[in-house]
Image 1 (cartoon, helix red, strand yellow):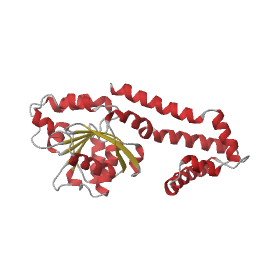
Image 2 (spheres, helix red, strand yellow):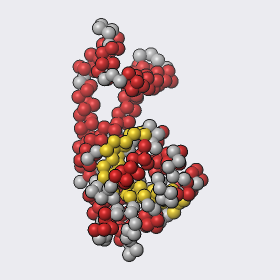
Image 3 (cartoon, helix red, strand yellow):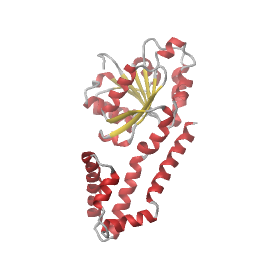
Image 4 (cartoon, helix red, strand yellow):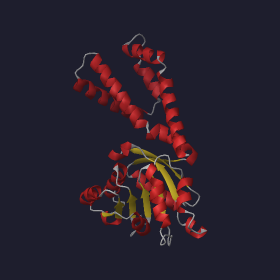
Length: 282
């Protein structure tokens, strides 16, 4: 990042907290150059004490003073927050300002419709907007984010956004039309894994294990399986076949999954999440 740039977060929830901690840990921004606003003073006090960042209750002031603004509010609050900012008589863009939204289901067009009308064409070009879909493993620096930019974003804007997100994990660029699928797969995906973990643990208990032992075995198995896929560079299908001996225990388990159409259940679930994401984007 260029020296002297300020980054501000409108919204002090878990993801804003995670990004702030990652930026400081990666030394991308120093605490005095990070600003945060929120309706909860207690939350702001906690983050100021934790990270040494600047906090305030004024979204308009934060938007005005920062070079990069992360919109980390809940989707249902976005219109109110941006209308307040764009509705002030002092609203304007004097230099280049990057806006990054991490609000699920809010399309770039909606953000443009709230921030752009009071601005002339020059000011609009100086206000690029990038929409991002992170996921909750970002909280432990193991996330993956999909991002898409509007027509006013230049390569430098994309590089800045990428650097911010890579502090928490991996980043992939997409056309915005694919972000609903990204939301369904990686955004909601951790919940599918958690649900699978619940099921495997309960299965172990049903088979006679103590709950703590079943939980430990399940978690270690999932972590080990992911590591195996990452390091062996083989397809999941290939690895599955290698662990499935004819007439063995794994084959018995997989026969049940195939009979219940396990793959189709997962596919249908992801498609349902994608449809819901699309509905929320309207």
